Image 1 (cartoon, rainbow, N blue to C red):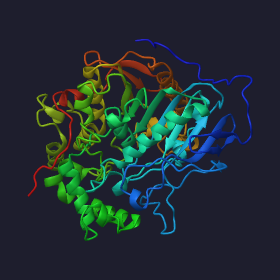
Image 2 (cartoon, rainbow, N blue to C red; image 1 turned 135 degrees about the vertical axis):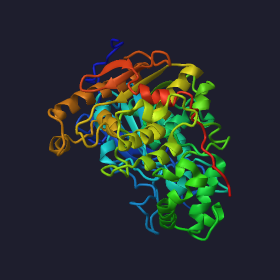
Image 3 (tube, helix red, strand yellow; image 1 turned 120 degrees about the horizontal axis):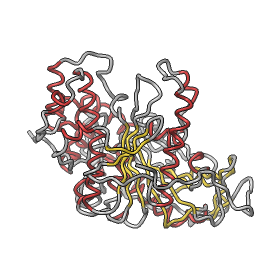
Image 4 (cartoon, rainbow, N blue to C red; image 1 turned 90 degrees about the vertical axis):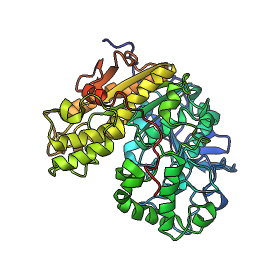
Length: 513
């Protein structure tokens, strides 16, 4: 299968573009002053909502207050409260900010890519240097990234508060983009959201949410987790966290505690999560107690049934994953997995309706440790992504699928997050060369694969097609990124067969005893 189209990624601003060392742009709330860094204008720390403090702490976001004069926008805003960034009592927590990178601040009408970071719905900040938008913007797009509430304040089920507050923050940032991005050289009618891991889970939800309708045209979902919670499950988890503080999960009671106290209570529950497996189900064995809540209101349905029902028919979708998604999380890596341990893992995670013979039958050459990693990989990331593509095809509109199979070292493989580093161009080539198990020529290959992926992402954002055959459940055309990317049927056929009849949907309590 051959490429449909490719873009020249050397962006050339118009000859009369005005380049001022410290450019100023008027937004709906006031004027911001950024700076040019090489060929990209950068504006950091722009408020898109008021600080989530006081009565706004567990509420839906409120648009930023206007300001007089010129606001410097050269430093990232503070991170939202999280384990490595607990605000002091004196902090105003003006943390709901976003950042803009643009190669042309004129009326360029460039495609806009809005990035939503991952971090287990627990952590993450747009100041992460691995998520810098300069290289992608220099290729010919306006890139926007944001901070949004995480942890208890963003995703806990709190009585008296709207659910999915972190995603409501994302929607507020997307509204800001619609109102302001043209002034930064972007086209508000050509916005693509893209995100990885928990950010991909948020996007899988956003494409179906009524509140997000009309705010973007395309979506790129990289490593979507298969975890979306029922109100019952999320309420029990939130109640367990609140109980660590001797409280109930209500706005009035949780407001008495500092962000640090809520973070510490969350950490205490995370250490005990495996103890809850009989009631929380496989959720208790994941690295996080939070996921989007399918409450029938803010989020009416889980992404798979919603997409299959046509909820995102008008949104172009690019979805995929890396080959070795679970390698970085694998607690058994380097240890021997017994057959009994593997049986327990298969009972917890493998689909109950599997008629293919299962992992042992279809992967006869694999050790128990390899199958342990495979089933976790498939349940948490690979099969949710593939089934998302199937659901999108069923519901209408076009979808494209990819898998990253390239890696630069034998220890980590094609690991979780590697695709994002390649797209953004933030993979450190010195680290690639110096890794003790690096493959020969890995650094040169990294540059080559990164260029291909970045070209495809930007082509998709610009034209609505990434340049290869769309996915359908019969041919399963997939862009496979190796040292020389190709388009071929989905590579993980054995896992696909095992999960063929499984229905991904909302996770609920196993029992309530």
